[in-house]
Image 1 (spheres, protein in one colour):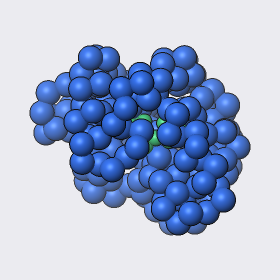
Image 2 (tube, protein in one colour):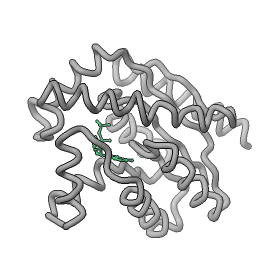
Image 3 (tube, helix red, strand yellow):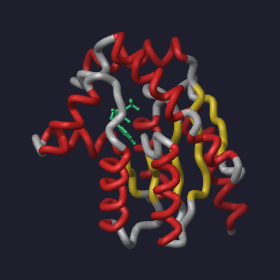
Image 4 (cartoon, protein in one colour):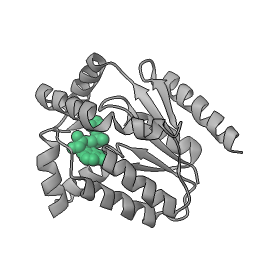
Length: 195
Ligand code: ADP
């Protein structure tokens, strides 16, 4: 099993690159944002509670997303590996993920971290808000709050994997294909080192 984390602030391109990466490397895409939006669409109690927080730009409680990831890992016992997108977003989530993957003897191979300036992030998110239908994308204040939450709670998660030498910074500005090539280069070198 080959497990990767695609890391970066809101609007850094994780969703776009995840689609391309999962197709190329045959990984199962696990996006907590997508899982939560699907709960919202199905109007489940979990979705209704999560929506209140997401609309303010706040994080959903750790136990909720950890539970969703744990279920998803168990539902896909035979896949070649997972690409985690938008998870882990707090240190507690990172610790829980390590434990879950330890049980499967399949640790994180690398954390690929997309680097994008804050100015560019806000521009991209407002543009996405014009068409995405996501209520957290069309409000400047909510976008700023999401970036603030990222800087405060999520950015430190990289330190957790840095200690293990697993963090790879990749420039997240440029064309989608340029960024994809840079990510593939890093992944290929990790696959080779493993072999
Ligand atoms: P983006 O990266 O563009 O903010 P996501 O789809 O990853 O978009 O997340 C949207 C929202 O869903 C977040 O602002 C947060 O409220 C919630 N969310 C997603 N993943 C997590 C997580 N791992 N922990 C807590 N909240 C999460």
